[in-house]
Length: 337
Length: 242
Image 1 (cartoon, each protein chain N blue to C red):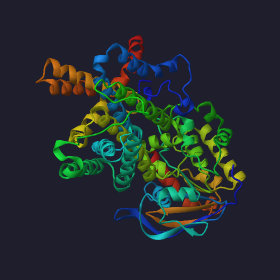
Image 2: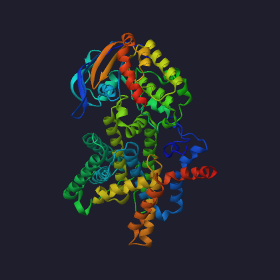
Image 3: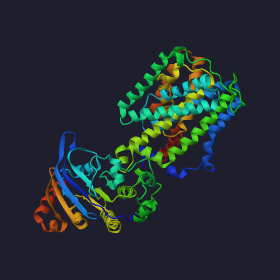
Image 4: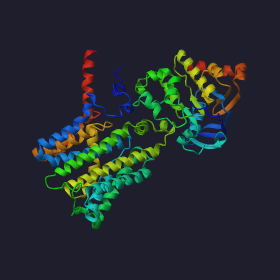
């Protein structure tokens, strides 16, 4: 009974039956990340910038979880959608309207459309081929943004964003209070959407596609089309995260499109744990806190510390931080045998 | 359950295989609506390839596959399923991370069997609905594989050695259920089987494949009387066992 594959699914029950988050003691755990986020707002107001950054990366990591974790779409190009979102939100605020809601919607929709179109082009491939194509698309976009200085500001970044007030009331300012709550609100909406998607029959069929695409075809599932839709949703979510990052700093630099950005989000996902959605919270929070703490204490070693942490996690926590409770639960059983 | 009128499936001059390799060498067959065809033969003669080619997983070099007279050989796999073909693969291929019920739900199509109807056919699955796919016994997995094909609303069911590795009592229950599906819903069936006696009992017609060619065809009654052919098939069966 110690089959490692089997034990992953113990006591889980069918995911679809748990569609509604009820108020049983067990499901109160769902409130923890949100309670922690809000508590930190009051406890550490001086670290609000860091917390907003974490929320944004949580959102980006959930989008990666949908694509890489659930759908098994191997990608190192998700920065493309993050960047499209960031630049769209930035450009909207300069040329069209400073309204952060309209800008957010535009960024989300445009990134989603980009995901659908590129997904249609590349999702008939798998594995390394797919990985290369996602890389290529992100690299092309970055190169274009670098050259199109008149539109994007190129290497200097996009400057002169003029943000209006959120709902016409809350000002985006130096203190970052509005940016924090906006990020938390957008994350919460997307979280609910993602949570529902992965438990819907559509989400379960995506799970099946990752495990055995041909078998899904043999029960009548249009595999390619399903993957394209999931990729589009994931891209839209990444676009929202990109828009949030531009609102937070009121600046968009080329880094949002860089390979490193795609890499970091993949690292956060692996760190936290794939196919859990909640793993994104741990992955993003741990990564950013370790990075910032290391940078403060050992400025020259911060990258090395992150690297060592990642190696330790993949060596000893194959399924990321989210697998810790499961491992602890298994220990006593082994001792009893 | 579907009360739809049955439809048949025919294969004409089919050449197919993997890449350049030809496994099926000019295979033709015709299963009338509501009929049951047993596909017999030794290991490696192309029985499974015949089914996977009907599903569209192999390289087809020539020939046609017709469902109810309509050519489907150029359709992508999922469209063949929507057109009315159900496939129960030899490996069963239950999704391990999905519960038994989810394995059915992802395959559910309008016009197909309901999940409840599958549970009625296989009460055992109802008891195991919340178990993950890889927590089911071989027999339960096979029931689930059949159920997963049924919720897609098939009018032609392709069964690849469904009894392989199952206990006799399970084999009996499964055959009873399949007979019920056929007799009550008029589902046309193609059954690949190693056990001749089971095939003769269950099917109305049979073909025998050898090296990708049809070397014998007739009714199962005729096959029951043809001791020479049975012996050649059985002889291999003994070889397989040893």
